[in-house]
Image 1: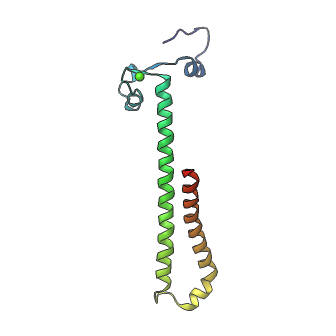
Image 2 (image 1 turned 60 degrees about the horizontal axis):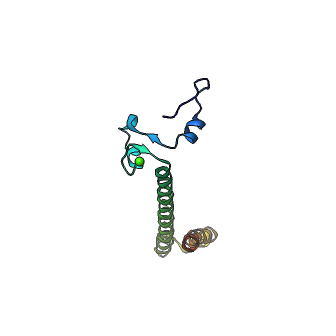
Length: 126
Ligand SMILES: [Ca+2]
């Protein structure tokens, strides 16, 4: 711990920006802090925090890609299932004619989700 001027009130900004190394022994039960301390010396250094930030960024991108992929698959199944459903006798030609506009929007919306997914993939692959 670096020396603090006791005349000042506790200042979290000071702590965050003036203590490069954060000892974790008083938080030894905290597994998140233990994991950030990658060389296991009991201190979280500036570079270990930077590394953790990078890993978090990668993890968040991965989660985003997974969510987008899942949405694209749901949209794809939505189109396939709706098409199969429309060809079953459950729904009459008269009903399809009435719902034509809504069905058009349904297909367009699902197709644009799929299109967005491939667009995002192409953009991120650059
Ligand atoms: Ca360390």
